Length: 152
Figure: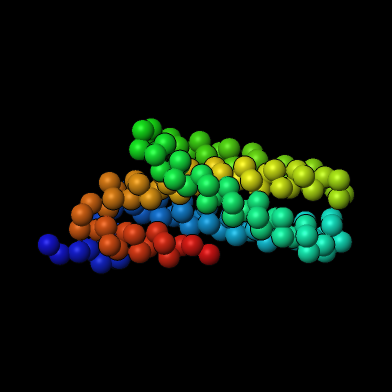
C-alpha cells in the first residue's frame, strides 16, 4: 500500500483540507489567548510569579485530567458536533477575560482558562479521532503529521 504525500492529501481531500485549515486557525487562537491571558494575569497581579504559576497550572491540569475522559466521550458522539460545540463554547468563554480588571478578578481568568482547556481536551480528542476517517488508510501518515505540525 502506498501512502499519500502531503500535497496529494491536501489537494485531493476537501474534508481533510477544511479540518486542517480549521485546526490552524484554532491553534492561532489558542496561541494568541495564551499570550494575551498571561500578559493580563501578569499586568493585573503586578507580575506576581504565583499568579503566573497558577495560570500555567490552570492550563495544564484540566487538559491532562480530561483527555482520557474526552477520548471515551467522542467515541460515543458525533465528532463533528463535538468540535463545533466546543469551539463555539470556547469562543464565548474567552470573552470572560474582558471582565478581569483588578487582582480580585483573577479568579475569572483562572476559571476561564480551566474551562477553555477542559473543552480543548474534547476538541482535540474529537479531531484526533476523526482524522483517520477523513484521510483513509493511504493518507493517515501524512494527515497525522500535518495535524500535529499545526501545534504552536
